Image 1: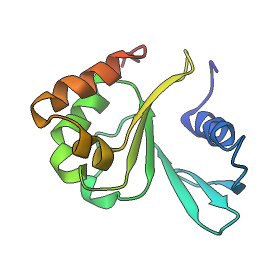
Image 2: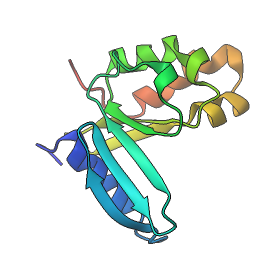
Image 3: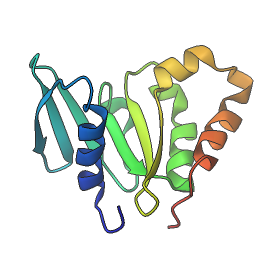
Length: 134
């Protein structure tokens, strides 16, 4: 996995996740990521950003946001939690060199987690894989 870009990793991730259901018909690269089109004509958009610091929380809803597993990206998620907690967005944090990832769906996570321990829970997920420096 070393030397892969986020887009390349995301394509491989989508293909891996689709090995059993076999629902993805095409994977198309876009300027900001990829779109996985399913046989049912539904599309899943993946936004690939090394840093999500410039991501506007009000502009995402059903996308998958793929970013590096950095402290800055975790801090952005914690800071903007109130704005994304009711959205169907999934955030996927990745360490490309180690081929590690973790994901969180704020809408689902917000319904099952203890609000007082949200920050600690997200930090635990973050620490479950190797942090990317930078």
